[in-house]
Amino acid sequence: MSNSSLGRRGRAHYVFDKDLVYERLRDLLGDRVNREEHIRHSYVGDTGWLTLYHAFKRIKAPLPDIVVFPKNAEEISGILKVANEFRVPVIPYGGGSGVWGGTIPLYGGIVVDMKLMNNIEINEEAMTVTAEAGVLSYELELKLNERGLTMGHYPASMFSATVGGMLAARSSGVASTKYGKIEDMVLGLEVVLPTGEILRTPVKPRYTGAVGPDLVQLFVGSEGTLGIITRATFQLHLLPEKRIFSAFSFRSLEDGYRSVVKMLSRVTPAVVRLYDEEEVMRSKFKTYTPPEGVRGALLLLIFDGFGEMPELEEKIAREICLENGGSYIGDEPARKWWNERFRHYYPPLSPSSNLPMIYGTIDVAATFDKLLKIYRAVKEALYSRYGDYQLQTAAHFSHWSKSGGMVYLRFYVLDPPADPEKAIKLREDIIETAIKITAQMGGIINDHHGVGLDLGRYMELQHGPIGMDTLRRIKKVLDPNGIMNPGKLGL
Ligand SMILES: Cc1cc2nc3c(=O)[nH]c(=O)nc-3n(C[C@H](O)[C@H](O)[C@H](O)COP(=O)(O)OP(=O)(O)OC[C@H]3O[C@@H](n4cnc5c(N)ncnc54)[C@H](O)[C@@H]3O)c2cc1C
Image (cartoon, rainbow, N blue to C red; front, top):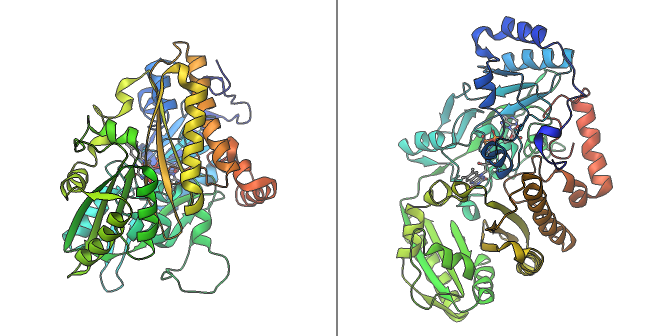
């Protein structure tokens, strides 16, 4: 097996008396401690290709030794104190919907399933909601909508992602251009530190405060390596009274890209999705059929809000698109995409239903001047190096901000090697090619799926040796025994 095969990872660093640890945890949580084999098998990883491929090919992968189901921060504090005493790895587990191997229990240890922590408190006067880490994204949004409120956070995985997991992996929803990423929404956190202390930050309104470095943002994106997030407070918005949909075709991707960049300094759509030719053609088999002649690029826009604002914004955006070579093709493609947006990601439409096919997503971000160039360079390199394996790509640009955007480039290897060792290595090579080009051209190597296990080896490339050393020092101070999610984030 290649080095990346999960079964080959050593467990030598972490040797502990499993029976004793189990008994100590039972003293704390009673029946909410489990070590039955079939339960441990449920926590073998996440929803990423590496985990699914191992299961599909029946390749041995590491199991956790114990799974626990705490109900509050105090219980988690007790668990982490035991883990520290016996030097046991701890893997926080939300919905397991991550895609880069963040919840794979590389060295065994204790999986802390957060889903019993599911309390929600809405404060309408403050326009905030405080949710425990195990709350599902979908449930949270549903509760808010019942009161005419929203977070504006709609990840495609909202039926399986939790508050803690979304914060830990820097999640972004489809309407992030208007509402921001999860890190823009969070105002305060409760975190259990690796040594068991419970940190509660003040709830600070956005764009306020001059009280030193931001402790909230230290834990956002830490992927379970610096502690366990137990509760978070987010800002809220009124549920918009209307949504206006609009779609444009372009002869070239460049024309569409230029239109988006121009419109973003004038208007703020909730959703902006620019599809390349390959994805337009793939879409034919999904939720809509592009009109005759739409091959160059397709742009879907959604504006939401109150009164005349959404129509006014759409009017300005439409003028920009028409001036830059776009043709208006009605509201239906964008409306249909919105109504059916979850269908793309789950079987039978998800590529995971075509295993052992190799697939993956390169979701990288950059400023306006670099993003399109990175996309071109990555695509060219992938087709020229891996064309023999019948590699195909399909991409869209989305999750834009006022300073840049993200390209979500899917790759599919239709003729993968049958030998698992070669297949795993081939996927690693494809990812490495894309990540190295992105980093060399000044891009950010992941936009909103996190780093997990797969991208950990590129953290130094992203942050530089001094940046990485700074992260390692922070880790060492907070987690002196290295128990928190070892092997992830490159730490
Ligand atoms: C079909 C599909 C569609 C997706 N679409 C999107 C999308 O639109 N936008 C998006 O952002 N992501 C998307 N993802 C990726 C995934 O849903 C996100 O990464 C999500 O944030 C993970 O949440 P989770 O609760 O499942 O976390 P998990 O997978 O359980 O964990 C992810 C990481 O966070 C850590 N962690 C979990 N809970 C805690 C906690 N309480 N404290 C500290 N660390 C913790 C874990 O140890 C792990 O390292 C998609 C995934 C799938 C499978």
